[in-house]
Image 1: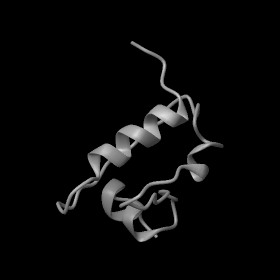
Image 2 (image 1 turned 90 degrees about the vertical axis):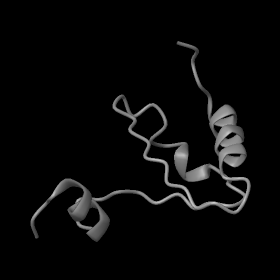
Image 3 (image 1 turned 180 degrees about the vertical axis):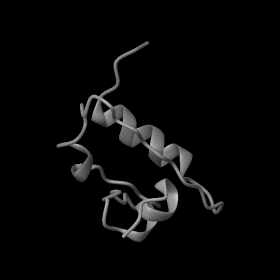
Length: 66
C-alpha cells in the first residue's frame, strides 16, 4: 500500500467533498501517524470533527455511557 501524506489526504478529501451531496468520512488512524497534522488540514467544503470520549457523537457511535 502506498504511503499517504497530508497533502494527498487533503487533496483527496477536497475532491470527495466537491458538490452538493452531504457525506461523512470516518478516519481511523490506529498508529496515530497523522494525530498532530490532521488539525492543520484545510478542506474547502467540509469540517473535521474529532471524536472525544466525552462528546455526544462518540457516545452514540460507540455506545459509551456518561
